[in-house]
Image (tube, rainbow, N blue to C red; front, top):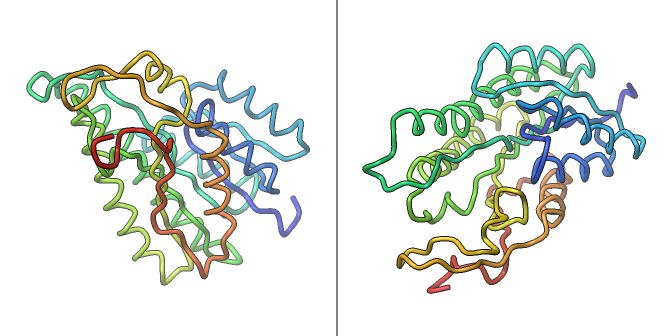
Length: 252
C-alpha cells in the first residue's frame, strides 16, 4: 500500500447510506474497509469499489459484539496499518410501537447496535489513530433527524440517536489532544430500502399517515465526503442534510 494511502472504515456498508458513502470515498482516493453483519451484501459493494481501481477489504462484523469489533480493527492493522476515517454508520430500528408496548428485548437490541456499537468502534479507532504514524484521524457518526426530533412510536431509536450526539461531543473533546476530529451528520429521508415506505405514507405526530419526500442517497454521500475532505485542523461538528420539504421545520 502506498505510504500516503488514506484508509476509511464504513460500518453498515452493505447497502443504503453506508454503501453510497463507501463508493464515494473510494472515488476520492480512499482504500475502503467495508464492515457489516451480512457478508453477501458487502461483496457487491466491494466489487463496485474495486472496479473503480480502489482497494476494498470486506470484514463481516456485528458492531455490538466486542470480540468481532476487536477482530475488525486487527484486520485493519494487518492489511492497511492505519485508519484515517471511521464512518460509524451501522444502525437499526425497532418495530414501531407505543412506548408502553416496547419490549426490553427490542429496546436493548437498538441500544446495543446504535449506541454500544458506535462506542466500541470509536474506542478501537482511538487506540489505532493514537498509535499510527502520522497520528490522528477523523470519526463521523451517523446521527439522524431523530437526534433533533422524534417520530411517533420510535422511543428506542430516538433515544439512541440523542445519545450519539452526546457521544460525538465527548469524542470530539477527548480527541483534541491526539489530533482526532469527530463530527456528526444528521440525515433526513434519504431514499433507501429503509425509507421506501415513506412514498406510501408514514405516521405523523397528529396520528395521520402522509407520504413524505425523500432525497437521493448520493447527496448524503457528497456531504460525508465534504466532512472527510477537511484537514484535521478543521471540523464539521454537526451537519444536517435532509429532503428539503420533509416535515421537520415548523408544521411541515
